[in-house]
Image (tube, rainbow, N blue to C red; front, side):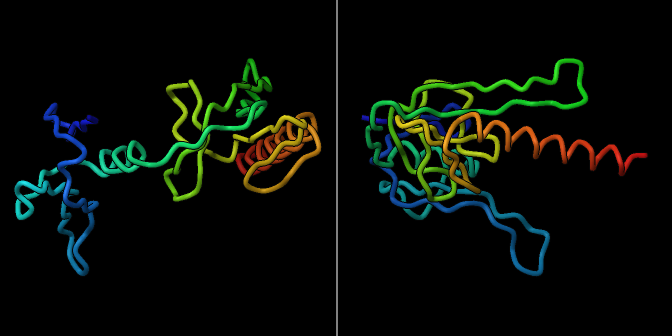
Length: 163
């Protein structure tokens, strides 16, 4: 049986959940209504929690599909203008796929800090092709070059703005 923590070290079984509602702001007001989880045993009384807890519950309950062999998550790290700019590429195996934060699919990897795909991530398949949100690349080298050129342009733009 899987459990969730409401953020206050109070644990409840996932299968006891009747419904969930994320936080929101009342229209025309500054009043903030907190996120709540409603249990089957007491559906009128919600347990206050954070939106993050609801996101995690949705991810735990989501289907996980094994990844094909050779699928890799690439993370591009580059800091032009710093003492040690890089670039570096972190490369790790994709174990499976699951529903992501924004309703798409995200890779499941061992890196505990990975929370979902961002602009500095890409997927490399077994053939060596690389895919990200914006384009497909014939190789990892082509993707890295595009990422570095983009970061260099942004760095030059910021330098010009500050001059």
